[in-house]
Length: 208
Image 1 (cartoon, one colour):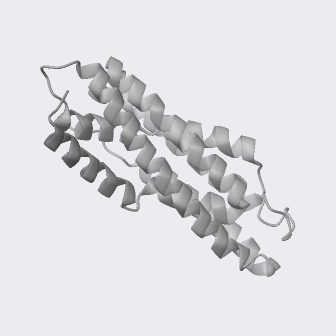
Image 2: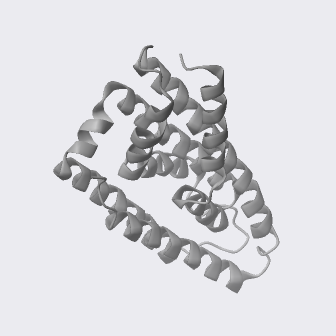
């Protein structure tokens, strides 16, 4: 296992990364504003489980294989991008269907499943784990075990931040829920954010 000083540096770096606004946080805000706190919480947990897919894949070398293959990276990227865009369009189209007094537009279970798929199909997450975690792994120890431990810590930090963001976004939404027209625009904006995230992922490049 790495030295204590290395482990503390990793904890600090992983926390800073988790606190830095990125696609995951924007996705959580969009889902919470569109569907409420329960949907946001479900999406946060779903993203966390989706992150565990990359942790496991990285530990057994699958992520490295995907990142080394331009074709595999492209397939994963396109699938994840179009899934996000589809969710965004779906959210936009349903913005005027759900009444302003409703708490959710999709439901916690679908939001949970969608969160898993969104994160599992994100090749940038795989690239992050491959670039970030190996810097702290002790090559003289059990590399796979260390990768899993570091990955679990990173996912725990990210999920914790997502949960906090969910509560803040839900509080902001609660103050606006009595204004039907504003709620509709808010849901449409959430759909647009998801489409934007999907478009950004579609143009992501594989690390050389």
